[in-house]
Image (cartoon, rainbow, N blue to C red; front, side, top):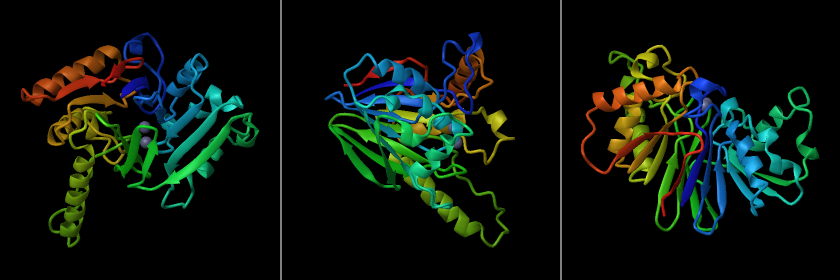
Length: 296
Ligand SMILES: [Zn+2]
Ligand SMILES: [Zn+2]
């Protein structure tokens, strides 16, 4: 298995000299299997450069898995070059929104509305299929098996586990660890706590012993105090998750847009020191645009 980060920023693209090292584009990850089959995790602005890169490759079967439809995970899709070429087959997988009942096609069509983009979905030349999936769905693409899990976020957000014969990679999409906001004297506290404990255990199980864990790590603990319920993780929660789930390599992503390269490294160093990481196989990294890893 091979993967490459094409976008690692959360919320909004922030190009500029202060983010040049880790990158300013929003979420997009390319994963390739041993037979060169390719999937793309999320279509933030990073997918634009990936689309340009595909013009130089002999690869016309594309599978895109969308975690959720917040802007920073879909904004690059209308400008993805393969959309405009008739020799490309593009499958786009994503969740049905349980509240509205809207499928992935209906929701993505909204961002192609003529008020927001000059070319409509039906005018694109590529063969584009939309596939609605649910939590627990398993899809095989060549040697890759992709399963999904609903990570806690203000709207439905599927994270994906990609496996081949030898390796596994988990991507959370956006994720805030569920917690019980009720007080113990509230009659509903116990039931809520059971639900929280169950979902947290299920979340760890989905990540369990993955070779690669790419995890939403938007905030420092200090920042999180005023951002509870916004749907994102922290350095501390991501370190705890990586250790609890016994993952080998953990990549922190969804970098907060105001965090410069220097500030990102400072926050990262501080969190590792504070959490006293034990000497074992687990390694932590900051996801970096353009960084690629071959884990075969
Ligand atoms: Zn996001
Ligand atoms: Zn989001």
